[in-house]
Length: 345
Image 1 (cartoon, one colour):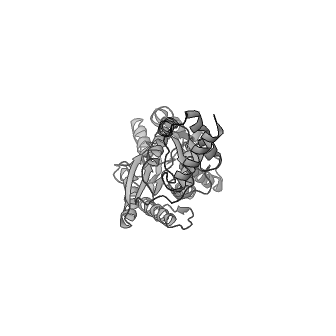
Image 2 (cartoon, helix red, strand yellow):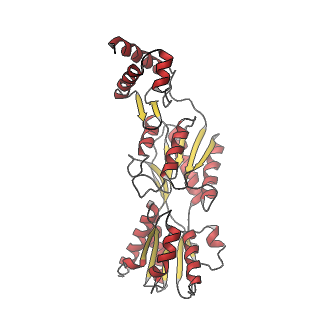
Image 3 (cartoon, rainbow, N blue to C red):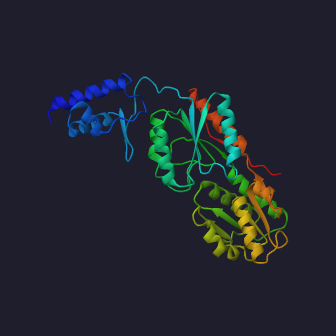
């Protein structure tokens, strides 16, 4: 490789980027495409792009391609906001999305929705897809936020190219100073357990989701309430599950976990209804033999033939506040996380 060849290409790419031919955040053609378009060898193209990457002008993402990291002019405004949640039409998500869309539409933005179904592989595919589209920012519900996330590199890249992200419900601690809007799950777990303690319950089971941070924090509040009441936590009465193994795990271990207990704290209303059905199938009366409490106060809890206490999720307010924070960031203002209280009707 002659020195002048890669230097000529280097200067050409730098000039194209500075002149806006390739804008900040834009994906460059592949090495083969650049080689065909410029007449340089693929080795020369790779060498020039590697130098631009080392200088911080380009950013390479494995499995996706090479993107412009720093350039002028700024990204053009699209008035599009990507919203990524685990689910869209189920459970509490319509209310959260309504809050987001209400604020965004009032401010002239269009919402682009997508769902991960709580899978990190889906999350990566969706993020890569949105990175190819004209968007100004993102609102994201993290996927399996209690686990190390393999897509942190994409979130770092989004920040580098000037696409802000506001997280809802949970967030990734690996990211530096993430902006998020969440419910106070620790306080919620403590409060709901205290309600059972006030009724005289002393043997209280807990069933929590292990692959997201909400489950961990609700468990922390639950265990703190027991400790404050002088009641030791019994691991035999705590059951952890994940998105994938919930049904199988509950079928095998639910009754064993609830044995000798008079009450149980359930991770959410979906789980509480599943526990209710298992108890009834085994001849256990609710709430006479065992009392259930839960989170979200969704239509599932409200329409349940057997009533149980469920903490009220600030879902619509959460969506509205997340959208407001994102719009504020887009106006070049600093933003901070927000933690909202659970309600108790």
